[in-house]
Image 1 (tube, rainbow, N blue to C red):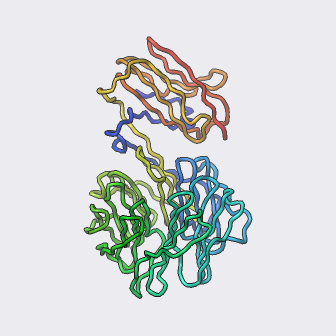
Image 2 (image 1 turned 120 degrees about the vertical axis):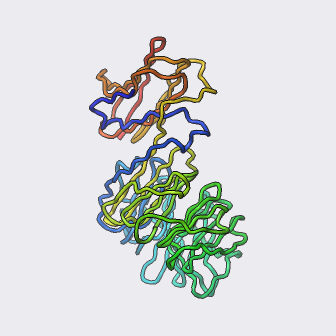
Image 3 (image 1 turned 90 degrees about the horizontal axis):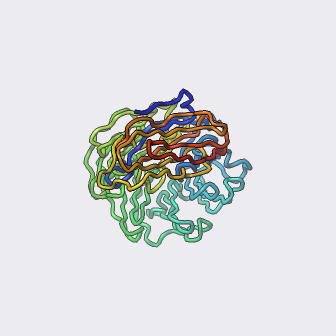
Length: 429
């Protein structure tokens, strides 16, 4: 049905269904693409804020950020001297405000920026612990996780945007052999989890007021990665993996392909991904089976998806050699929801507009018809035929990429025997 113009490098487009709660996340196709960080060292942590904004950090106090979906990665520590050491965890709320924790020569630090990394402020330091986890739950409130001091886990809290950090009065006790590592924590309020060096996972269901500890049933020394979906199904991993269906109360061993440490897990619904060595693995049935879907150039260290995604998932993974890989997802199919047949023809304005690197075009047809959806440049040259053929009555959605095209004005036209409409869209790079 779809006819693609040779200039398809402009629009890596996918026809997608009417989006309803029944189809969300179930009919998605995913693609991993390597991006250019301009850095040859080790990237250790990544924070995906949304489809366009992401931060990454690594060894030697390097920090990068993108606000255009990864088309360009900018130096987010251009004035060095404040941030030092190996980055352990980064969190951000947008392209300007971010928090970073690092360790260097026996000391640990937390930093904050409010101007896209042009300037960083050191807001916490300690020589008694190592802060490995960091998560802001709002612009004011957040958590930091570190090794125990005097057999008390260092669960730090902030209520003023990370400018000050204090030990939680509810920080749980620890044994004298327990420590933790980056990547082994998750905060999805009111739930908190973090893994330990004796393959247990601490769990709170009330925002950190109280905690219980549970054996994760994995082989290895440290819990290196954990992730739970909104329904309480999740995984913990070291050199093996286990699965919980009750929010982390109990775990059963789960086969996982590949060799070496499992460094990060992400996902929602029944779709989960993990990274292991140079491999990225995907399950569409909550870990019932896994398939390797991408091989990176060098070993991967961390992966993150934006919080709260309910449509197709997306995110980034980072690793050695400055490697940055972006996953994008699009709903696919040709059907429609017969219970919600539109009453009229409608071509919606694309959103966002202006856009870079992606935008969405939606339209409806009230009856079975022949339809064309085409893209034109500013002087009327046809760029791409996105749709040409018979369509059932229903609502349709396209996700478009601006890759390969310069900034400027473009037009898209929906044409049927009974209806024709054209709208303008703008690419800004």
